[in-house]
Amino acid sequence: MAQLEFLRDVDYPTRMEIYKSTDAALKNFSSQSEENARIAKEDIFGIENNIKRFIGYQEGLHDIQTMDLKAADEQRLQASYKANPKNAGAPDPWQEIANARTVECSIYKPLTLVERMRGFNSDLAQIARTRVRVTEDKDQAEWRAPARISDSSLPSGTALVLDGSDL
Image (cartoon, rainbow, N blue to C red; front, side, top):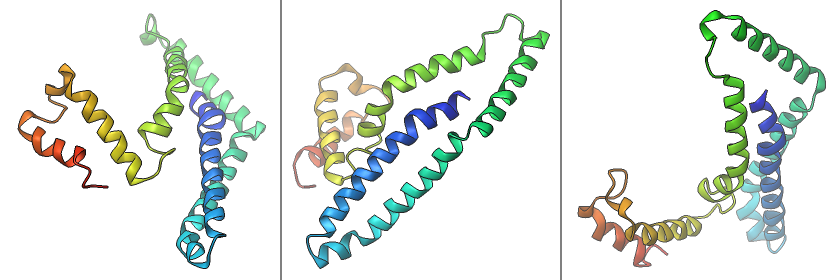
């Protein structure tokens, strides 16, 4: 239930807000000339399909009867878990999920809009984010961590990101 509630209360409304904003911007751009309308036509079509899709998803998650059935299923599963002697003394997975959901809700917008680039859907935004990170990482000890770029690739990697030729 926690995941369905998260989708209903946080994820889908945020996506709808982004889609509606993008749709409005594309329609405004489209209204400025026939060429702009041609350029934006496919994007508008895709965005409007996403809006319809998420309206349908939301309707399902707001259906009281469906959600009551899901809640009853989860309650039966919880009772079965607690009744199993193998789970005695084990952490409560529903509480762990609730704790994770609290964290997820607190980081959702920055994660979604900046990290996943849903708020800045452009090559320039990705380049800007990479430049900021390379500049910050260069001065930190983590720079040499295995997950980061190695020293041998630093000059060429830095040159690619910082020289401005990708703009």
